[in-house]
Length: 456
Image (cartoon, rainbow, N blue to C red; front, side):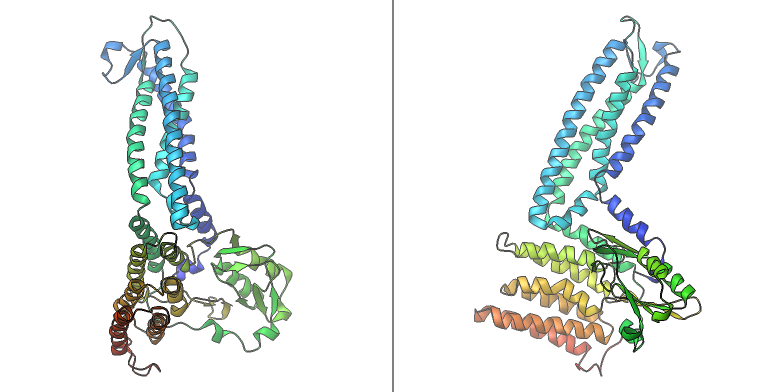
């Protein structure tokens, strides 16, 4: 992301927080822990209210003998357990449907919804509260009347739970609509794009490496396999500065690392040590799945998966794929105004210390549109909307690399159309849109050699 985010020491913590944030257990667990505190406060209030005259209490305070209060609490507790089972069952059914239609990787978006977590947490808190309260209210004199604000609170929590259950069912029904999910994933992509630096030139990591790096560096791997979830670049810079070395990372966030491979190199090899290699390895967080912390392609691939599944023969829903294309083009309008993450890092004295791979505009465009093009290459509606998206994005391009990447995508779309579309009228429609797209690109970037490039 931007310089501060890339060099922040909290990237590993952010990756962990992303896993916690998108789990169904965290917020319900927090609210469940609050239930004993709420029970203690409610019982203390009951004791205070019970010292005064009962006729002066507000009408909302529940007043009854202990046995009647316990019976009401038992009924509320049973009802809440039944409703909680219903809500959990409905949630699991929706998650199963979402998995089959949109893909298992999109489940994190459903699990990360605060509304869902809050509803489940409210049910958990109410059940624990009623259970604890039932155990503390002792049977006493059948004729003695006691004030129970705690029971009033239990009734209020039950009413709130019923209202939240209805709202939860509505939100679940809306969440499995493709447009809703596409917009949610698109907003996550926009947040990642918004964290990038404003457009500016940056050194190519491949050009910054010494010519004899491969021969003169000592290479080390990681001890376990997994996706790189985060890299603490500042820790690596500090360690490289202390040892006066250059660290060349072979992998970036989002890549899959295998044990004992070439994960990074330390140059020159004469200054490398096992202790330094261990420090660098500990700065690399691995996990079983990717995270959006430093991985710009994370949300892009989630959107693409929705489109690819929609274009599969089993679903055959091209309009969902078109919606994905529109949402991607919206995010790309902002991405073209930003620089891709840096791959060259220096210490405080300006000495080059760390080099790591970075995505290019071409690779990000391929990640965004190539799979959709390949899955829908025989569908004119998909190819036409891809070309329209490139045409809309073209005026936002500011550099020769961006414009060349857009032109390459347009050429690939037209090549697939000429090979896969048999109907001459359909092919003519695609060709006409392709011509309009190429004309817009040519007006901005007349030459493929980049001589007459509009820099903006």
